[in-house]
Image 1 (cartoon, one colour):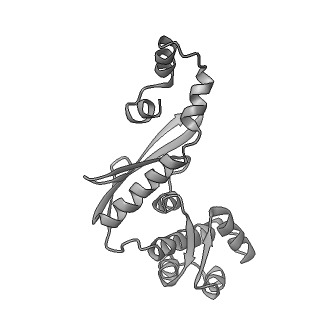
Image 2 (cartoon, one colour; image 1 turned 180 degrees about the horizontal axis):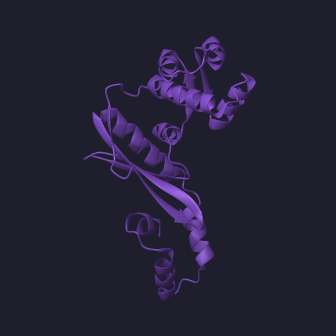
Image 3 (cartoon, rainbow, N blue to C red; image 1 turned 60 degrees about the vertical axis):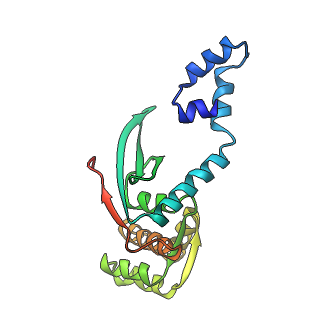
Length: 190
């Protein structure tokens, strides 16, 4: 079922019909649980694909497509090139979202020279910049941990938090070995 659904794009209703035709008494809900549960190994493989693709590539393309599902906006981000394709569905289409996706499931926020350079290039005012500089070098794991760090430093302005977050995500990527030579080509969908 996992192979048919995820690789052959067989819908859940068709899977249900096929299984019933084979005499397997299973509900649509049970199929959904089987397809959406215990996916840790698949997600780890997906993240490993992105990490390897980024390590061996000199150029990647990135594109986002938006759609509404159950009354909510959603986005699918594609990252890849001629040798690999990686997809993620999220509720956001932003620079922060893209940088988080590049972390391949292990999001870290690192204040280092690269992060500080970004903060200065984006003209982060002195008041929020100074406490971040005082924290350098430092790494924070996870979205909630980073939000708590910004709160503790008194950085509350949305623009300042956005710039600090983008810089720290970039710093985290570079700390993990993300190539500064990697060319990123944006897609045409905007």
